Length: 258
Image 1: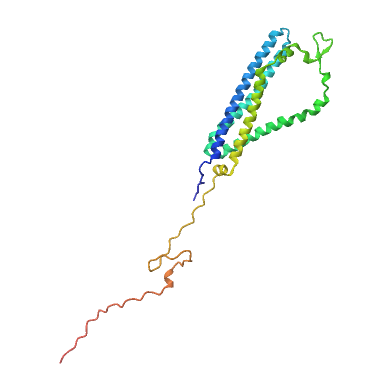
Image 2: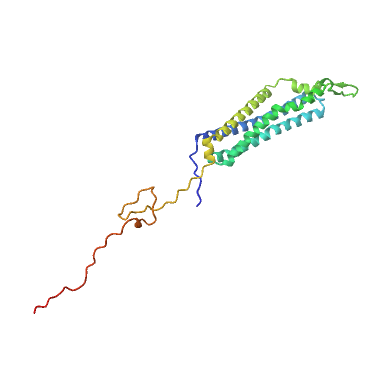
């Protein structure tokens, strides 16, 4: 006999986690839009610097444009993928899918791993910073007879010297949004890992009822008390009822009078 698992009613923790997950998706979409807007804005800044410095080296200009597009892809594509990931698992989580809950755990662990790599990855390049001497970083000038620091490029100086409020606000907003997404995802993971939510996603199997036996009935018509041991043939414990005398069919005796 197959016994189906009994799923309890959806706890409040799962409902709250669902709405927090949707809030994280909305923030991720906003961050992705901000990345695109910043890329478009910075491309305009490159064009402005080219207009101010007509003799800028084409290699420098193309390098800046490529770097702008590359950083937009590096930041925007993972953000969109994470938004799609969380959006696709939100409704299944609300309906009690344990697979969707595991995918949300994976998304939270991936974000923590990225943060740890960003925070600790700088130590991997520490020997490189100690080995390089910043005073020796130089490049050839236009005539090729001497060396000038790369920071003295007029194009780069024009591009990065001007104060850009939009870039500053975008960077601050992007960092705050990424931190908020991480906190929301951690809250969702915590709520989905609580015992009431765990019982909702992994319901317990109902215990099958014990096989029932018909209650034995005393010969007098009353059931036997439970839980005493019941004999399969209770009649053997009682004397048989006295049988009533059967009427005889002999004819009455007759007398002969002489």
